[in-house]
Length: 314
Length: 314
Image (cartoon, helix red, strand yellow):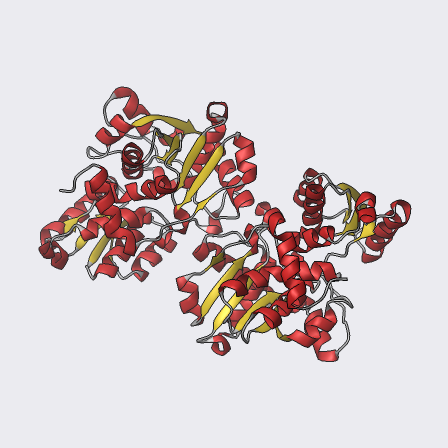
């Protein structure tokens, strides 16, 4: 197992660097004056396969033993991790099998297939996803890689923030969207080991506020609904990332669906970049508590840009 | 008058540089393999006020005499030049009066007003636009600055391509959208003075192909209709830019409305950037004649990103 410290994060970043983009950090004068702060957007929407997920996927692939490499990998995902693992596996010459629910978007199914992965279509329940993935593990000896609850994946995701702190070690706050918890767990570790004093704050849709409730109760809570436009944030935390989040994340800000849509539209309009709703959640959190962020130096992780243009909320 | 040669373009660039962004040049692996070429996108959608127009506007303002500065400037524009001149004038402490048609988009009216310009609303005919602008010139002694048929403006627009050639002097082809003709005239001059051997090719909607017909007939032709989604390209050429275009532009490729929409959607999806329909016209031209561009090193000017998100074609 990899070490969860500054050396571990550095080694991970060094390893995956040839396989990922060092994405740009953008600023926007008008959004700075809107919030009254200095905001640095880490643009993972420009990342390979359209989201930060390639970081964790690449690292997980690099950590495989030779035997695991020859038996292939399997995951379940309806979204960005499916494409990312397919791409990372193809680059490394590893067979990837992706279990995707029948109701996944055709765009994402097509993209995952285009990266050369084998796709197993399952029912759209968590139980059937896991069942099908387990079957592949048993039948083929394939290695299961969880999209967010895997330490190698968490280390990989940390590098988005490591790159931001390399340029801006003096950030006061880092805002990160919370879904399965892999990204925020990794980014919070980066804040601990690579920033001067930065606090990590999560941003979560009110409609799926399991992480907010988990921090309040001290146990991993689940969502009754998945009804949010932020399709990347519908999944829940896991036992690998929750302790890291408990220890290193200051708090979580919850935002309404309308605030997510407004933030997404504002960023498209002002910054001329395409981000997905999950990315907009972090900026929406800034808007809602802007009096608390006034005068601060703030990092915002824009997690991805995979959006269905035929189905926009405006 | 400024000199129309390498020194003139260099002096112009030097002068306006503090007032504009040196916009990024982006590439996209999947679009390179789609066309079979090496494509460099000059992203003026990230420019101040959302389009290349601030380049020409800033240069025209810098070229004013002290007397002209004190009497202010006037232009007519329904679109990007209105915002650009308003911003450039404000930055220089010059009064700007913008004649805008009553049917201009509310977003653009609001943005122009927010930059501190006085707005005169006119009827949506070319005659009334010019009449109202002439009235301001007579009443106030203001200097009229044409959005595209003005040598100072043309020199300013050239700098978009100058910046591209500074990084890639060996481009084979530069593709530029054609509307009023200021951008392509300027860019074609940049190709002459700053590239090794680059050909400038225009891209124009079939529905408003006045520039294509003008090159064919040798006279400035007009459009009967303005029915194109590429709202920045509805205007016609002028007597200052047409001779430059005749001399330096190789040819013009015409594209259908559907090709413009498809190109715009493809760039949003693959590059995760917001571009306006007028910008997509240049890539659409590449798609249509891709067999001719195979293996070449190509520059594409993405002219702007001011799009009404409430009124998308998809």
